[in-house]
Length: 314
Image: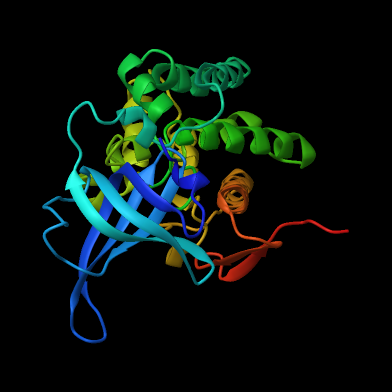
């Protein structure tokens, strides 16, 4: 297997990849060409098919395809110029080679989630978290394997678990660093802020938006889940339910970033800051890891709207 992360400029590649995106576009001369996004477990690469001839057989998005092409550098990023394509045949590829996954131990990450739940003192919050993250075996199984995003950060198997734990750890530290913070409320909010993503995004290899993901989004889905589960617990305080839901509703911080509410409690604001911190630092990590160009500059990142640089110096 020739993984995408190991490709070099001018290399001839004959390999099987997962086609994540397929677009038919027109060149400046008016000629049709294909723009593809190919994936394996190490990352993705853009590919172009400039000459649509008999060597380019029929295939669709989310098909495994065998390609033959040359690795080029375009605007400081690797790209494949593809000459041949056909659908991959059963037995020619190992599906797990094409599903990006966390390099961390899933069960160890989950054990740390359980330890955090065990540390909760508020009986209502503790029961809520136990019902969702311990007693609901089907949800736990999906949670362990799910991604945290389609493209931007932690977009790999186990990414949601890894991201959720990281947010909890940041929030746990900040809860003792500042006054007036309710640790139990903050940890619960951190654990639940992205739970809706298990319904917003489909499982791998698709990892794409579901109907509910498109129509509702993970913020609304997560809020509905907390309402449903907390209503099952006798005597669950209404104000506590509202405070947890507020943290979920406001964790994107601003209206323009899809947040129905802006943070109005210290816990909601800490959660928002922790979420943004973890997501954006992960973007730095992933771009540095996948960079295979010379020099310290990794390249321009559209979402961060800046060039990224490695911290090397002499």
